[in-house]
Every structure is written in structure tokens, then in C-alpha cells.
Length: 269
Image (tube, rainbow, N blue to C red; front, side, top):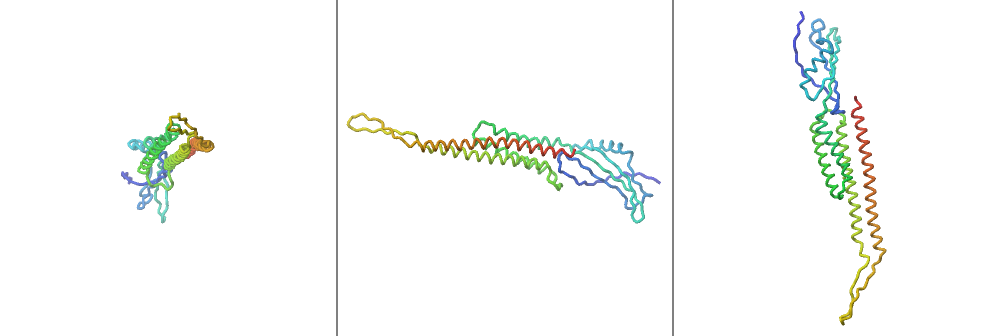
């Protein structure tokens, strides 16, 4: 006598989050009875593979984060202690919908990086640029905290999204260090310029007997003045060269970093 019963099962699947949130998960679910033999219980799929996948996709319509790709079913028979048992293996392939993570995490981090690059071209003092960059660094640290809350801690490898956020955080930190160094060079040049004496000084001399007084010109050593002015120009020139060279190198590094990471991120497809 053949009977058909409905059974609801809850199971877990080990996930590989290396490509999170653009990851595809493949879960294998194996069903086998340890009590009934092949003659007493046979595990078969309800309909063909396309019908099973279609009916399962209707259930998955209420699940916003995951999209069902396919379900493959394989029925085999195993022999244990001369007893044959029926075994069904379901290979379930699902894909994560990444739109929520793109809007809430990936795009904001990218905007922070773009603002950091644009800050090099702002016509403002170095101190103002430094304050702006520190604000961007704080914003990126907040986004890293959001990533820590959203990312499940079940992956053995560091996810690429962690490399993405951590790399941008490091780039902004290096940019802040470069701005501090340029500010130091400019301040050194201004200090050298402020210490330069006037080229000439005037002193009034005369007598109390009503004779007209005439100013007397006191010459200062011009070599010291020229040396200090050259030193001031030298430090300003060094700061400008370092800043311009760093901008070019920084932009190239950002392009290479995003290109390599993007190729790795979408390579699984």
C-alpha cells in the first residue's frame, strides 16, 4: 500500500561569503530513511525538475533577499548491511539580491572615495582640506561599522566587500598623512620667510641746535635675506611637487584598486 505524507524540514547550509553581496550559494539537501528499506519507502520528486523549480520559485517570491535559480534532484539507492535504501539529493542554487547592500553600503563608500579625490582640487587652505579629509575618514569608519553588523560571520575567507571598504579606508588615511606632510612643508616655508629681516632700515639722526635732521640708511646684509627667501621658495616648491605627484599616484592607485577588485568580485559569473 502506497501512502503520501507531508513533512516539513528545517535545515542549514554552509555559505561562502567571499563574493558577498554578489554571491551564489549552492546547498545540497540529502533525504534518506534509516528505518525503512527500499521496498517500504521510496523517495521520489513530485514531477520533473522544471516543475519542482517552478513551484519552488512561487514560494521564493515572498523572500526578498534571495532568488531561486534552480533545483536539481538526483535519486540513488544505497546499500547498508545488505539493506537497500532510497536516497534523494536536492541541489538548490540561490542568488542573493544585492540592491539593498549596494544602496546602503557600496555606493556610499564609493562616494566617500570620490569626495576624497575631488578634495585635492579644492582651492582652499591645507588646514581646511585636512579637516574635510578627517570628516571623510570618520564617515568611512561609520560605514565599516555598518558592514560589521550586516555581514554574517560564517565565512572562512575575508569577503571582498571587506577588502573594498578596508582598502578605501586605508587610501583615505594615506591621503590624510600626505596632507599633513604638505602642510608641514608649507608651514616650514612660511616660518623661514617670516624670519627674514627687512632689506633696509632707516634711522633718524640730528642735533638739538635746530639743524635739520636727515635720515640715515642702514644697510642689512642682503645675502642673508636672499638665502632665507630662497629657502622659503624651496620648501613651497617641494610641497607643490609632492602634492601634484601624490595626486597622480593616488588616482592611478584608486583606478587599479577598483579595477582589480571589480574583476575579482564578478569573476564568479
